Length: 489
Image (cartoon, rainbow, N blue to C red; front, side, top):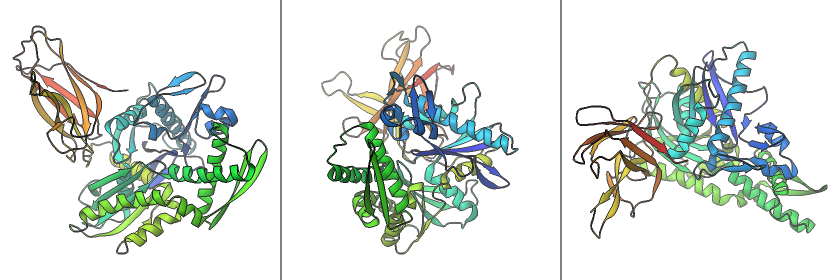
């Protein structure tokens, strides 16, 4: 089977196309696998709902949630004296999702061999985050290698599923994807002549999502509980977990009702706290402002060039009533629709995986950032500065590449080493002290013995269709030079 996987901040899901319709590969009545990791020496590793069930009371310190939003810093997590990298945790979550998918498929009489997998990522995730997700997914089942046949931006996956049944050539639509940890915005254009049914015009992302709404409610409940009882919750992880769980339940109730009654139990003492929908909206107003402002920016950049008359809201957090109400008020000329909020992304991933089945399909995508190497400006002078020479330029259609010649700085060097950077610019060259940038790794070119410093080494840097950097190099005679690209971990 060809499978689509949505690795989410709160939940992860897998789906497959069956009889031309997307099918969630989860137990009946289960939304998805919680993206939660747990470890202790007695239990070992636990994932998903099992992890949540075990991590009660003081054991909650051994549980890692929101790992997707921790990828940017890429710091290890220590549980019961053992350290785990982000890559290891993400790989374990993918493993749990894939094994359950295989089991569900087998029990349903389907082929449970995974022959290809499409994964989704937020629209503006940087290279390091995409690289961790990509490699973790590929290694999830160990020796059982699964080819990753595509990487889709989450709002694009949602649009792909939407356009599958609503193709109207030339129609522009805004996708507002509010998930657990990110708010992705994408402007897409329907194009039935394209194999993917869409062209991506523009995208933007805010690092906010449902978890931030949860935290606002949790802060309110914590303050109310302390006022009612005189008991200081402080920073006790077990107490904070109970407060957060109560906050999440309250948010879900307020998606259907005008008020919620929150029961908070600490050491056997149960207290009930009332929360109205209006209070919830007031508490979270700054978050909603931030999300809608991102939507406005994309809209305003293009409204004079094309007709934008439809906005679709996806992502589980779009179930909050404030989302559709606010967007409809801000964009009165647009039809605002909440479209399969929990499943649109994974449905699109499954559809795309099916489209790539048994054939090569061009991926229409663009570079989110520019990628280049560090070079020296005015070398050997008092004004010596470092510059970035971008070889892949932001917004280039993927795959994108360019070739440059570089020389060793000395005779008989064993290799040339370049630091590689990700920048949010569109310039081929830029000073490092003028623009924000992120070091993503080191590029090495292994030189033949006795290479003189006058030798031109032809170097090609490519950002492939899945957003992964590749490098090739040749000497003046056309002989291939051994290359190595190491991502910072």
